[in-house]
Image (cartoon, rainbow, N blue to C red; front, top):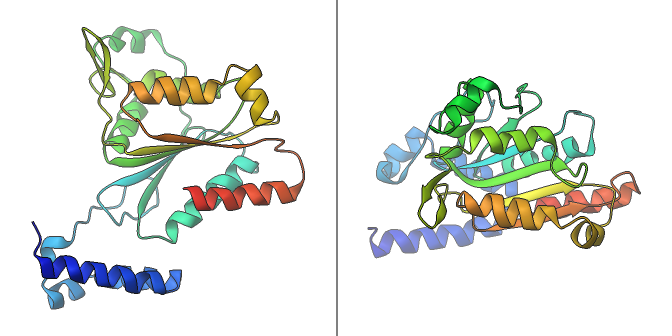
Length: 252
């Protein structure tokens, strides 16, 4: 598809970028995607841009997205600090991202009678469902941020899966079971906060994040690669929370 000279040039530029400070790499990235640079270098075939996503306030930089699904009602929470850490880290890279803030969107997780009547057809009367599905169509990486409540995910996140992951969008039914359709999502990072130690969640709470969310739900819709980051004792020492935020930066 590309000539050897183009490929070698990209390798050389990657080596140069690694030697630069992050701020300088970002400046170079933005410069090289400007129309004037493209015209000078005659590289229009290699530039792929799409418009900003409505309502997110985030400008896109590449074709595929990292989509963050945030499920915590209080913006003074440690979960919000995690969200801020993730978005700040992504902003320092030449990547695109968008945030689905379920509580801020006033998403209703409860299935209404009208919605249930459409469920078997893979349809919904909730406009947010269509919005979220369109956002997921361009998603390459998923990041979930939520608290561990009553040995599971918050109700609003459970409702997100119930109402958004519909037939013919997230899966198809076959004679051998459900076949996931969101295979374009290459990876998922599940970031969870709680008070119980991780070993307690795994061995005494049924391991619901790893077994149910990652091993069943995400796998069923076609997301095969996922990892789980967990911060226990969320009300503990500030140093512990800071260490976890540093870990989040390195893992997303």
